[in-house]
Length: 156
Image (cartoon, rainbow, N blue to C red):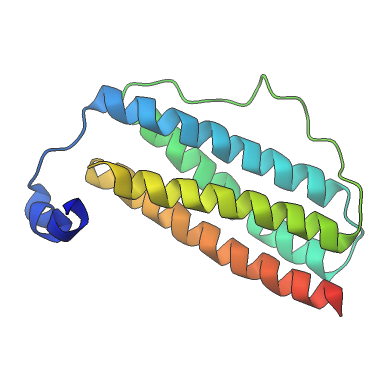
């Protein structure tokens, strides 16, 4: 029901948004997962042989880092302290075939994209927060397509 009312409630910012404190509580796990995804990419890319797949993934990594920064910036603007990742162990280079590495990335990206979409639709986030969540979900979908394409090429 809420999804059907969202276009009406959001027109001009109408409707009840969750509080700043609740936004921080809900965005912190997203920030943690985002940092985990980034660490997964870093570890897998470090273990990949030089080639087109590695180059294409490395080319999109700066955008993933910007997405992480946007969520952190949003948490800060809401008065919270974002996850920093300083307590994480450095990513170890992944072993296995290129297909296995791409499969690991694809699985992690699917889980993360689903979490973003679920969070964006679950509650009435403030406009900026929801816009960032939706943008990051779209970027995740684009990465999934890239990984599918690379996995299909690795099979051949």
